Length: 366
Ligand code: FAD
Image (cartoon, rainbow, N blue to C red; front, side, top):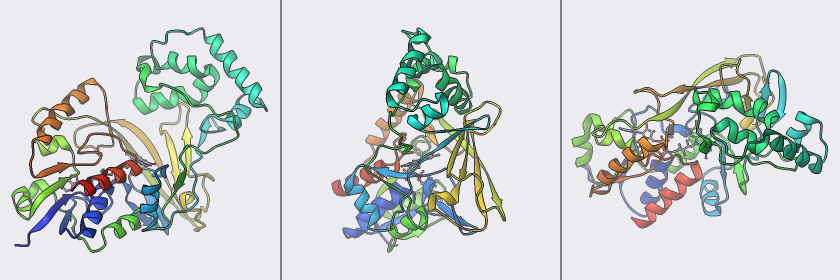
């Protein structure tokens, strides 16, 4: 039997990055994934010539030059800048909140007028000790922006009334007094030319990969083929849910190919901020890569309550789940041969650049 130095469970960005780094430093790695494709949640699938972000829109952004140089050494990144549009009952607003938004909302044309208007609205609210998300948001930005761009969208996202949501969800609401629609503040941003799958393919070049293999279906065998295991799946699953299930927030997608429609909404991301529209946003995938194909592919994104068996997307970092994770983490730390890494194994929301940074650091330490 071939003996590998490392068995890596998961071909997501964490697994692929660590597999690449370890292989380059002379280690023998064997990577498996239970899905039928590589890339985990950043997987993009070519549909009618368009790279479709199968598990939700992914925009690469970072201020970390080491990570940016690393990804650019595998694929070229395009000049995509995320600038979402909000659609409230048919009227459009730029996001994040900036001078364009304030002009659309109030007709104000100078930063001074906008700042005065915001301050006026905040004062009018009279809220000094917000007791819930609604009061928190109104005390930060006033009622016009809150009712048009925050309330219904947030309620759809969480499936609960804003007055029943805790204040900590919105700690601050960044406001820009410049005409700048760039959603992120990072130094570097873009989408890999040819899609994320290409990036992961390059990372896994020269590495032994097997798909459609669930680690737990043949754990004893997989444990026997390598000295150490790097596990990027769900941490509670690893320990057979012995303390109970960790919860996630999930989203679902309704994807449609619109043949003969070359441009559906003119932007990659449009958020629907009213209550009547059941989905939270529509993604038009071709605009991530400035595509000019004759067709288009759109995905309507719905927020929904997570149930056992659903795709785990966002960890819920409330008291119950944090306490539960701490218990699982203690078990994980006591494992001699197994290292837990990535968003599912660490039960933490990481952006892509953070996952890469953590995987590179782990590879160095190994
Ligand atoms: P994953 O991608 O989940 O990979 C884990 C892999 O392990 C999967 O392929 C899974 O099939 C496999 N696996 C699990 N259990 C087993 C098992 N038992 N046996 C075999 N294989 C197994 N980040 C950004 O920087 N920008 C964005 O715009 C952005 N948008 C996002 C949108 C959404 C909806 C979500 C949920 C996340 C977004 N992210 C974004 C975060 C990004 O998706 C993550 O940082 C990244 O995917 C994490 O990689 P990972 O390898 O840790 O996990």
